[in-house]
Length: 206
Image 1 (cartoon, rainbow, N blue to C red):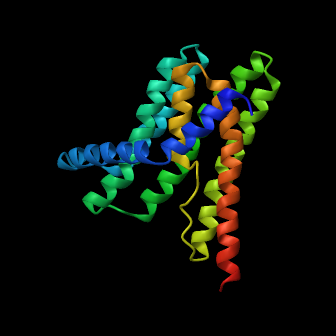
Image 2: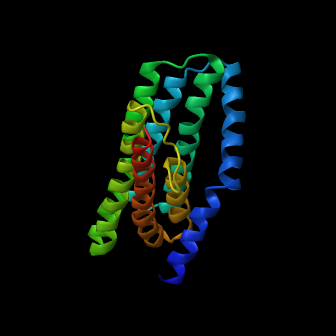
Image 3: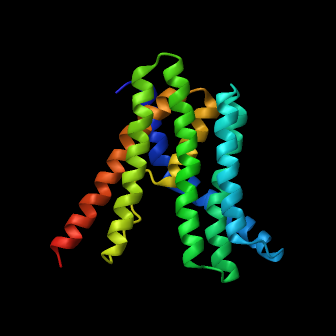
């Protein structure tokens, strides 16, 4: 494994711990602030998706740092909507459905923009890795959804959605986007495998 990828792996492990908790604490504070103004959680969800799509367009226009900042803001809003729903007592099936669907739309738009840019630059391996990372992220979410239908809690994993967002933002801001994509391609598949193994073992113990 090359030094950049090794550093990225260590970074993924790091953001699974204390820094992630710090981001969640900040999102919780924002959610409490929005609750005072009676902001709808669904409105926050929609705004988060629109900002993610805007970030992907900004990236395609050739402004990766601005795109990273926008995507960071969108990711922050994405953490806020669920917290806001719980704080205000507005947890609904519609809200949960809308959040899940629009999360995928926002994340996929950024991955698609990155894949397009890599393909346009002739980086075939990097472009393919984007699709692997997107597939791994999709499988991570799918395994959890299927597990919950079976009554199994399955939120564990090294690189879940918050980590994916943080790593993408780091890649956009640092200029190490290719290295981050390679890392995500591996780490998302690893996470999907972690969850699959967890569910498999849980079902065997029934």
